[in-house]
Length: 129
Image (cartoon, rainbow, N blue to C red; front, top):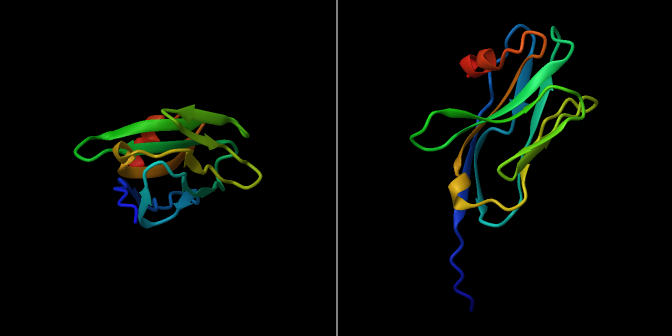
């Protein structure tokens, strides 16, 4: 009988509020997965007043402030940072976050957000959280 001690990664997922008919929806609640496995956090968006929304993933590690993890401003952009990646899929209106092999240090709260590329409101997206 194997006595493998698996580290667990706890990921909190929050749904962000709707603003001016634009919104993002992501899986809600807490997800616990084993270290070394694939993490996928779904995020779909609805942009009724923004023609070309910018999409963001923010991360908040325990005891720390909010940090920008990924930002995509053009449809079909594939962006990556620290092993995380997401593709801005305009057809599917999605911006799913993935990491091939998660570590215990990835335990955090992850937020999906959208903003207006014209106004470049990255700060605005952060404030809405």
